[in-house]
Image (cartoon, rainbow, N blue to C red; front, side, top):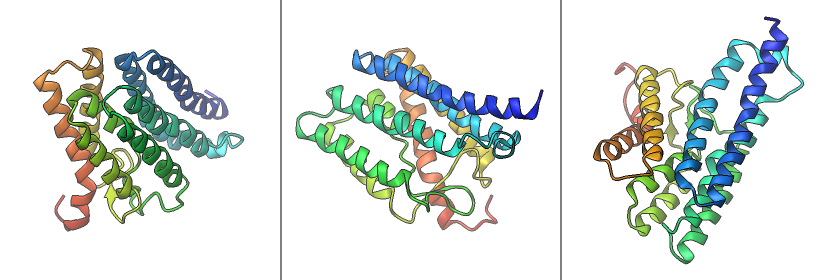
Length: 231
C-alpha cells in the first residue's frame, strides 16, 4: 500500500475515538452506564494501538498535514476525562456537593495536565498520574465503594498529576513492558467483562480489576525506588 495512504489511515483510526466518545456520551445521557463504558473500553483499545501504528508507518513524514498528537489529546480528554467525570456526577455514586467537587477537580486538573510540556519522562513514562479517569470511574462503578472513598481517590490522584511521580505507559515504557502490557490487556478484558454483565458483583471481575489497577498505578512508583538491574 502507498505509505501516504497507510499513514493517513492511521490518523483515521485515531479519529474513530471521537465517534466512540460520542456513542459513549449518548449512552451516558440515557444512564446506560454499561454501554457507556463498553464504548470507552473500545476507545481505550484504539488508543492503545494507534500510537505504535503511527510510529511504525511514520505518520509525521507521510501524513504531516494532520497532527496526530493533538488529535490524540483531544480524543483522550473526551474519553479519559470529560465523559467519566460526567458519569461519576450523574450516576448517584457521589451525592450532593461531593459530585460537584469531583467534576470540578477532575476536569480542571486534567485540563492543566494535558497541556503540561513535561507530561512524559525520558523513558516515555508519565510524569504524574496520567488522567486515566475512565479507568478510575469504571473501577468505582464495579466496586461501588462509599462515596468518601471515591472522593478521596479522586483528590489524591488529581494531586498526583503534578507530583514528581512516575506512572508507566504500558506500551512505550520499555522497563517491565513484558509485564505491563499483558496486565493492561487483562485490565481491558476485565473492564469489558464487568461492563458487559452490568457491573454485577462477580468476585473474579472485582479481584481482577483491583489487582490489575493496583499494578498499573504502582509499577512506575516501584521503578522509581528500585534499581534498574532488578528487571
